[in-house]
Image (cartoon, rainbow, N blue to C red; front, side, top):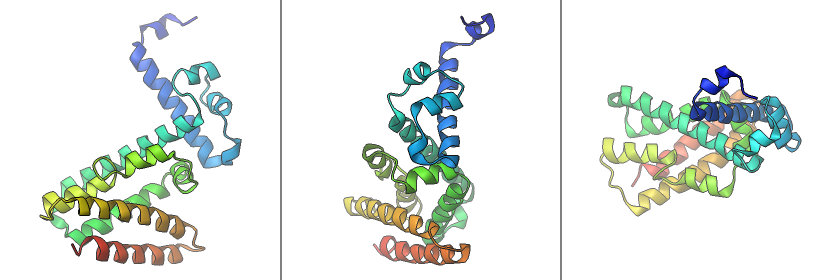
Length: 203
């Protein structure tokens, strides 16, 4: 039975707390446990919840992993948008592209659980599609900069190029993280910057 103090907490607030607890628990496990050992029961136990409580919010662990991916990408977009809003006059198109990539790599460095999802191909195709759409995903940040800050015309071709750049970028960032040393990883990332600049900024 809920305690009087718990009953005074609005239902929506308690629901949000439970969702955050589930996502935080799954994130902890992703950063420390082999993927095939992560189950809904283990997520619920780590979150100090019953399995039934978890299933009131998510049908399976795939929904949980997708929710983590969306949460992290939303946070990344908020960070990079705030950064560019504060310093937009300092950036050229090439510097903007480089800064987005550097910021994303730093974001990945700080979030091993998100790296496990992104590089382990544990995000569902539907969620990847939603987040890769230039109208709603991280590519939208770059498109907004190119169109509103640098006067490049928004076209179907631009959207397609941003989508292709995002897909290629994901694979090459994964490759960069598989390099044996930080120096080797930097070489790959520098080449990625050159490739994306040649592809996206010569429109």
